[in-house]
Length: 230
Image (cartoon, rainbow, N blue to C red; front, side, top):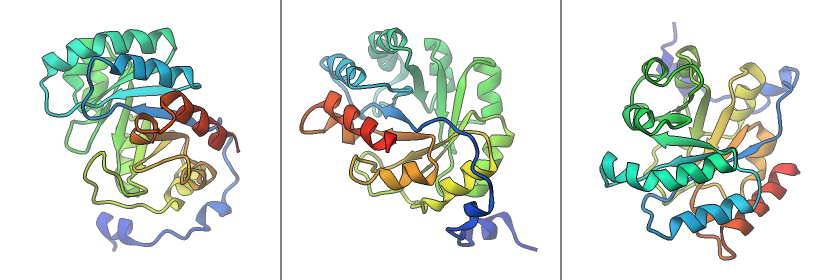
């Protein structure tokens, strides 16, 4: 009998999803993540990004500062997202998400259980879970009540250290078998995003490809919209 770990180590047949009828899913959407550090000018950068095209969600992911400092910088960003009907998601911290009245929280594998987040944040909260390259972790997250699962990193990234590199076929498998949306994350830019969109990603999670774009955040978001419409 195979263990759960052994099951994840098995190579997923790239053509596996073709055995199933395509699910009726909406178009791929953009999920924007903040840089790990921001300054007073970031509010203008976020506004520019939101001007570039529809953004389904914005995740505040700041490292190296405490929750009190994050709460102070979050207020104008959260208000801006509310004005644009963009979900405001807090990374890692259920407690901070509750304190801010955020639209949801994104949990890493060591950041808590979706059930705990649901109990703290309520039925309307958007709860996402990092699942790396693991089908098993994704199914567990779904069973625990996650609203979306995130696979990645699909490409090398400077935003954070990564140990996992899933094949895009995991997106096709998930989107054909399960109804819960899936997010593709990790090193995604305008030039490499297309296979993830066609593979079945419901959302593209992007960060430096927007904030470091030579033509600015608005141009980057507009370029991603073109990729997601193809």
